[in-house]
Length: 139
Image (cartoon, rainbow, N blue to C red; front, side, top):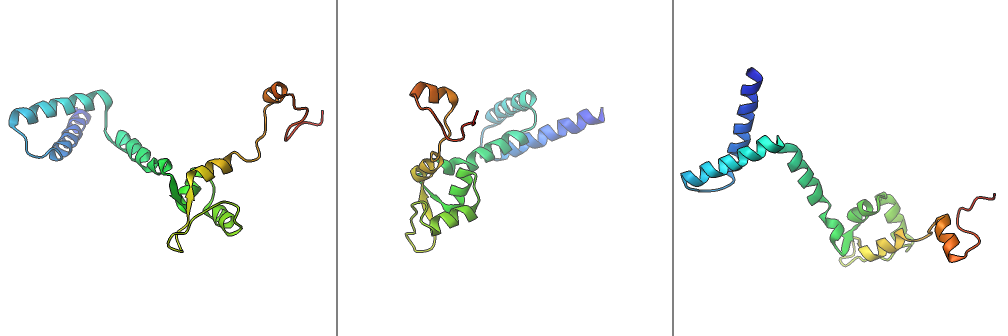
């Protein structure tokens, strides 16, 4: 019984929090929205996991940008910033420094980097007629 009360109170708090973001509305509109929110919460449970998932998705939007900062490029590649600093210092990847300090890298150059040194599957080697491939067994 107490757990049901606590659960109901948590749902009411969540509903109140969401309603507070709506701004001024009529009583009928507020009741309608409360029912909609209540139905949603009853159906899907706590909003916390959904909001966390949305935040994670929003944090990845930078991957759609044409030009990325070094930090963004490192996350995009799944590589360390140190590796990218070394690559820019040795001119291993084209980069831009419009203000002389901040490093920017074109996403196309990152994609090109990811496609270097391919290791072909046996199936694609057989289809292309190549007799050897990178990383071939000696058997």
